[in-house]
Structure formats: C-alpha cells, structure tokens
Image 1 (cartoon, one colour):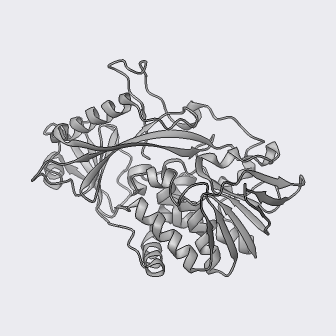
Image 2: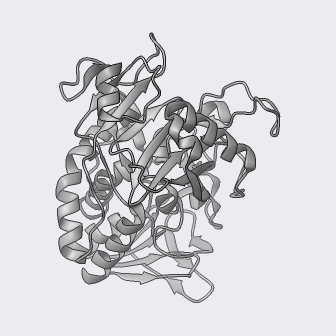
Image 3: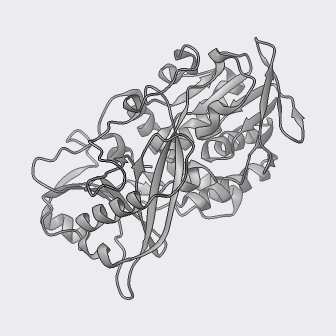
Length: 390
C-alpha cells in the first residue's frame, strides 16, 4: 500500500513510522523541519492525570490508553533510531495555592495521592510558603520534544519511509468522491491513502470540498524558559499550579502556557511574558530572579468540540489525525496505532473522534475551545492571557 502523510509532527511521523514498519510505502511531506510546529513548541508533558484527572470522557479514556503505550513506544523509538528522546518519569505535583481550590484528579486513581503543604515543599523546596497542599502523581512523565522529533524522523527513515522536508502540500486534488493526489511546488504525489496530520494547518489545504475540510483552528500558546542562577537547583518534577506549569528540561525550566485564538499569529508578546513571569514567581518566589533564556510561541490544533479528529474523512482514501489541542504529545502512541489500524485493516474503535461528526467546515468560536477568563486590554496591568497546557 502507498501512503502519503502531510505533516511531520509527532502525529505524522508516528503514523508514518508505524505504517512503514508494517510494510507500507510511506512518504511524509513537511513544509519545514520535523517537529517544527506544535510538537517542538510544546513542553512535552505526558500527564494524563494532570490534564484530565479521572474523567470518563472519550479524550480522558484515550489519554489513559496512550499513557499506557508510552513505555513501549519509547523503547522502540530509541532502539530503532539509536537516539534518546529524554523520556523521564519525574512525576507531576499539582499544587493548590489556597484551601478549597479544585484539582483535576480525585481519589479513584490509586496512583495519585493528596499531600499536605509540608510534603509538597519537601518534594519541591522552591514552592511558596503559603501553598495549601498538592496532589502527587509519581508516574507522570516528560519527554524532550525536539529529541522526540529527531528520533521519530530517524526511525521512520530507517523503516524505509521517505521524508520530504521543506516541501509544502499545497493542493489536494479530488474528483468529489476520492482523493486523486497531493500537489506540492515540486511534485504530484499519488497514493492509496492520504493522511492529514498538519496540526493547526490541517484545514488550510486547498482543493477539498467543504464537507471534507477538518474544522481545525489554531490556538496560540506562549512559553518562556528560565535559567537558574549559579548554585541554584532546578525543580525535579513537573509542577502545576497558579494557572501555569513548570517543566525542567536539561539545565532550564520551561514555564507555560498561554492560549489565545488569534489566527496564525505566532508573534511573542510582552504581555504574555510578564504574565508568565508573574505567575511563576507566585508559585515559586525564587524564580523572580532567574534569567530569561528563551521565549517562543506555537500553534495548537483545536476542534469545535475539544476532541481529537481521528479517522476517515468524507472523501474516500482521506484520513485525518488532528485536533489533539494540548495533548498531542500525550496522545501520540495511540494516534499512531489508531490510524495505522484504520488505514491497513479498516478497523476503528474511536467513533467519538470521527471526522465526519462535523457537517462541513464549521467555524470554531473561542468559547467552544477554551473557557475564557475576564480579560483586560493587552497592556493593562490586569491583562491575563487564557491559560491552557501546551
């Protein structure tokens, strides 16, 4: 079977790699470099509990399924690529800044425990003295997303896949019933199956009829990176609290993230920088004096109902793997498995994510994607970007 995948983020590369291992002839088209979209911009949390608690919604069930696949996924990617992806079970500490503050996780998860403020500060001594307590999920993990993209690209090519970089898919040509091919500035690609895994750009390809366009919109997120002063130790766990998260990576600390629906604007803003710095200092006062090392913005792919868009599209031969929003890294192994089985075996077990649940190209409204807080105008001292994990 011949397959063309559009997009070399964690979803596109994971799917392409699985298909190539199964014997398919796979070409991945990427407009830039591997992981240059939401994959590279994300902090790399594999945190089903911190993100979704013990909910029983389709995305929460899928998150737990994906979480269980990660250890084997890591082992296989690293073995086949020869590269480390920086996977680490460092645990998630979900801090309550004041008593009565709601938490995502509850008592039904035996891997999560409620701890008092003293135990929370024993785990992370930099925490503010006034914290009320925390939930502790020791099995949650992180991955270096840049290393992950490099390793997946290498594993994919070693499995026989063809990775076409700096080659943008411009038009999907179809006859109204099925896809005939994908045109780039350099070539026309024909295949038996075509997979849209272009992240926030999934709905931007020309040529599709309205009913086949995945209703994906970009949600901008900004992250800052802090460097500790000489002699200061980084937090050792992923810390969630005060409307942000802190993720240690190498010698730096990632602080994220904002969420705004502003189209394809990826400009960094001073307002987001100041907000992230203020919130991080409120959670860990010592961070006020840490040096700013980096600041970036990326675009997450969101759907109108907040659920992933995975499966057969309204055109024969066309499949979609998008809409993962803030859980693209977490979902990656399960997304690869679902799409591989669907393309090769015509089997799916995730009807809630079916792309055909939308009638035509539906515009997303901010309220359909994120809960918005009161927002003062940008530049006002009370300005606060929407907060959501990347």
